[in-house]
Length: 264
Length: 328
Image 1 (tube, each protein chain N blue to C red):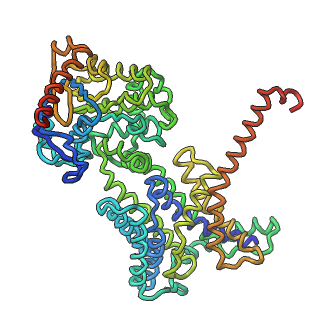
Image 2 (cartoon, rainbow over the protein chains, first blue to last red):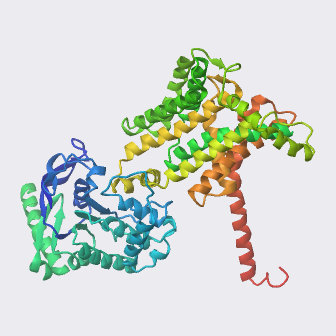
Image 3 (cartoon, rainbow over the protein chains, first blue to last red):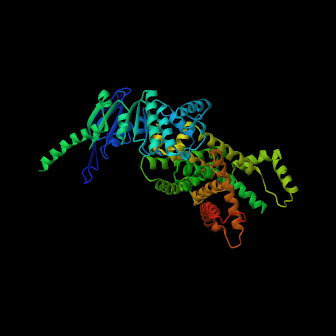
């Protein structure tokens, strides 16, 4: 479904700020895979997301979706296959437009935009039906401007907008990080439900280890632009935060020693 | 007085089309497009030179719309493909259009005095209908001593302006229109929903400047000439109309806002006419007055709001401290 092949990128090359954001990343997602990505700040998680969505271009390596090489496809063309939810609740919706207008824009993601009304009776009913699945009462506020909604409501709406057209790939970029704990929990729960309902192939970046363990069938850990750990299936089910931290120290500790040897 | 008010409303209706164009770029696309100062004249120049060369006024006006559309598109291409900042793209296009407009006209000023125009062509049909006599009859019974020469401009302009308003309202609710609005509202988001924001910006600026050029073409036919300098400050007049209209008539829905923009264009003309009646002000002061009107329209709503807030807080403070009970 999604294949990332030997992907590398370096920012500010040749300057003091040079940063190898991604180093030879290989990753393959099968239909229905739900992969959570963890790692510290600057590990390259968001860069990887942006490479897949097309908002950044790699130096070398390729990205394929459904066997089609999309590495040089511009972002707006690639988003026919990809649904995205951003970290910032303000980023995924248009604030001066109404809830139904926002949904209408999301509805057109994998279609050609025409000069017909974006919202009609039939679509309004469909939007309402989908909004009901969120259980936060947005279905009664179709004509409310999205700017008036709370962060949690906007993020729930963003999640729905990214998923209800059943994209081939769903990218979630720390989409609960900017919410208070109870809202974050709601969005996490909705995420699990919606991914299962549509059977979406999902890649989710998170800072929250518990969330990374609770959701998905695979987990990868990144550090310094590399994938340093991959767990899946039963092994992932048995994983705890403690084990994860130990594993991280084991892998990185070793590297620390080798660094010391070089410097020594 | 009646006559000058009448012509203020008349020209307000014509400039309303320009204001709608500015609304599209400034508000919908969130693109402060200074191309307007040039494309307004381009519209007038293309219409005037076509009419002088024997093209029927309606087709000449149509040419003007296309010229404006192209000018706006170039600004959009400079911004999206050339990655030039929006203000600079507009300024570059504005200055380039000054020379282009001179080339189109071949001289700084083209007169249309004895040429057919959209308005005087319709006047013939108009007189046969006797509508002027009807309206002037009403005014006479109301006690007016001087009567407007003709109602044709006003009625035709109300007709054209409202048709364009309704088309704009409709367009902004279509799938493409929604994507266009989102481009100005949250570009990152609409790109993640597979909209080509570059193309939308280019087309949006094209439509905006097509309306501005249409307005320029109609102003040329209304006033009987096109001058290469008639676009100076046009963007500010457009902004004045948008801001005044929004402040007075509100922005609850798209349809309401486009109506507000038309209203704002008329109010602006009326205020300007009234201001020029003041003894020590001259016609040359019009631009200064415009700037002052815009400044007032920008500051006044904030002051009123702050004042209301202050009073509300004071009242609440008094109530909570117990001083405000029965007699307050």
